[in-house]
Image (cartoon, rainbow, N blue to C red):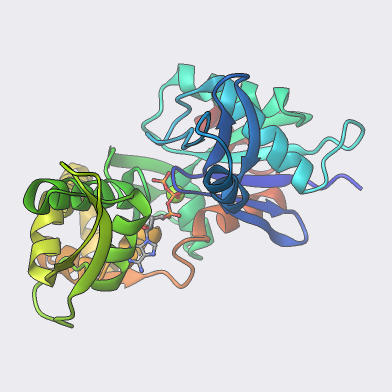
Length: 334
Ligand SMILES: Nc1ncnc2c1ncn2[C@@H]1O[C@H](COP(=O)(O)OP(=O)(O)OP(=O)(O)O)[C@@H](O)[C@H]1O
Ligand SMILES: [Mg+2]
């Protein structure tokens, strides 16, 4: 039986939801690419494993690094593999509903839809990610009362004010968890002459990274290669070093939230001040970030119960009322 599918093609993670079943796939948005044939050999965790075991012409690529399609060809192949993994065949072609960031251009929107169709869907429809997030967080988006969602993802921070089934103000910045990892990498290279991998930098962030001072004052031991000699070496990082390394990224995220609030029409801003901001996305799990947002905006911050799954679950819920919700999809489709 063909089931409609909901996709969250995130910069860091891809999630697929099948109508009536829930989340059926959750993988890092990484492909193992054969740079000689341009073939996509594997996706997700399998891709990381493959790259470690194969010759140097097989490399790991993040096709959506900037939150939109950066390489059409690779993305199409990745979606084709994803669809196959969730049971889509030539004769079993689902409708696919896909959450997209509000910031992507109409050219990029068409490219995403085209990639999904070419990869084997019978049709492709788009929904604003912030709208999907609000639905996934259980907010009533059709009410005349405004709500605000803040999604700190891997490659983007997207904030939106929603009222009466539409996005009335939004602001986004191409900065998220992956950029914080990159900032840690750069810091360690400059200050300790040590080259560390993206995944090591992420591990440091998860272990001792924080947006606020205080908390656990544990240090982190990291392994990398000496920049001049290429020899393996270990350094110990203090929490305040890591905090300094990522301070600019955290400030960028905070400025985006403040900016969106200031853009909201005054009467809607009142609703938000009264009701609070809903925070989601993997990047929002950074220690102290919710507290910093609350302090900077003077608004209560609610952490949603399912921060990483919220977008795909909201998109998935929309599959149940596909026809009724067409106007919402159409708004994102144009
Ligand atoms: N506990 C945590 N603390 C800090 N960061 C975290 C934590 N857990 C996950 N992350 C970060 O969350 C990011 C992934 O979040 P998410 O899956 O929401 O992104 P995405 O949807 O793929 O990206 P985008 O929405 O920007 O396209 C990664 O950068 C990861 O390091
Ligand atoms: Mg996301």
